[in-house]
Length: 326
Image (cartoon, rainbow, N blue to C red):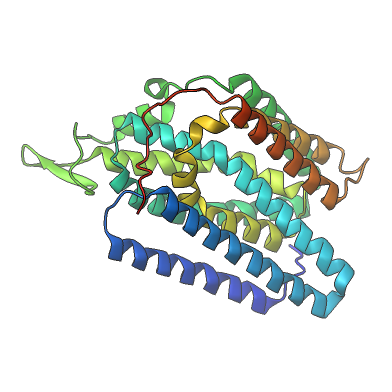
């Protein structure tokens, strides 16, 4: 697996992720269980985005030192495009998280911890999947065609399913989890296990954590191949993916408060997947520049979000996340 990143940048990346998670855990423990308001979610989202851009700047400088400005510009643009694609596809993931929390009636104060645990699991699982995927692409070029066809079909399926209400009762993952573990009827604070009639059993919160983790794995199967359409460098694929995941929790609380305003976003994400899948299928026929790919993704997102706002339902629905000021 060839990569343009020097060894010291790999080490710095690992250190940065561990440090970021440590700080996040310290803040989480200090604050305790509480509802995350829009202001707090927005501030944390800006922090994660700023860290991602700062890392991309460091990546550009490292490549510039060894390969010059032209290569550095191309590689940093690949990181930015991969980061934006992963952020975009994470939006659909967030809406599923919102559905899970609503279905199990998880109070907003407990959602933060669940998402934090889910993010750590996502980082570990996605790292393994990306490294395996990078090896497959480097050894078997035709795998790109499989990825492309899969993304194309996924995009078409997402377009067809957009706007439909998911049915949690028919969710196969939920049915499987309920078979393998006895679950209490009610939450017991932030505990994952409780005692019922003297027997230790799982609480619905543990079920929620498991479902969040399984959901992320399912979405990773869609999103990771999408980045391979931009670059096959394992460092760029991994770092852009992980930095997008680090800000997932803050983005959840931010989007959950305004979910109704972006009701057409799933259609835009479906178009993005179809575009990326087509790009991958044509990789040996037409070379689409990274800058053009970035422009297409940004344009699709902008049009979809603007059109969503213009056609947003005029409903004063109860918000799923407490958006009160901190």
